[in-house]
Length: 342
Image (cartoon, rainbow, N blue to C red; front, side):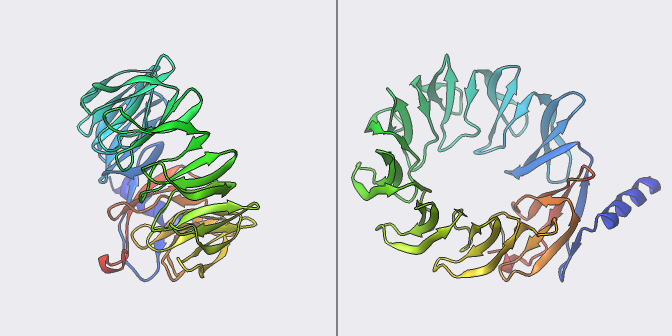
């Protein structure tokens, strides 16, 4: 036992998990692969058996590695695959929906999940009952009470009773967020409301859904942001953008990433090779020399790793980090005071 403890702490020192100015806890995870945390559980993988299960935030196995493939928990259920069939389990490992479908949604949304049988898609509820028949060419998750579906090569929207609310007429669509949905007509993207009214004329090469009152839009090969009236708030000059989280959005020019605020000010300079969105006051970043760590919103390095380290976003005060070179995984706790996790 003493040798094991010594090896564990030597490993932490060797790979340099350190924090700057704050204390934190580190927990080693003795598994070949560990996924991101979702609803307090993380996937783990056993390579010899080629099976996956789930561990809790203490690193304890709560669902044994019995499945050929698993997805994250959402709304209390996780999709699992045995052989070529998919079903769902709960957090105790109980099978709620027997593996029987050719494909399923990664997760439930608003109490429904998409399922595929014989190359057609429909929806089940959390008991596994098919509540919307498998008649569609394509489907997506419910968002704000509606889901987009594909029929005869065109996309429209249905409600939770399966009633067509917006008839299939679009080349492509995404879900409703903040009352608006992106739609593609004649190769250009715009936005509609839930009455199918065209709120923003299709004119963009590509768009993102609305988040925090703004949507990313692509014009002439560059990305910027518009408000819900279609007014350009942030000039289209970025090669890539993502949505706003905790007031900041990741943006990229010529392979270098940083963060902007909702007025377009670059509050964290574009200097990183990789970034994740902010979560609980911290964002994972990877520097030009290949080192990974976490920064706060003032670009202060709060948790610094050595080479080949990577990390997921914090979830309820805990994040999964990995040493890509050595294959070690850890849980770390957020070192920021709760008052700064915003």
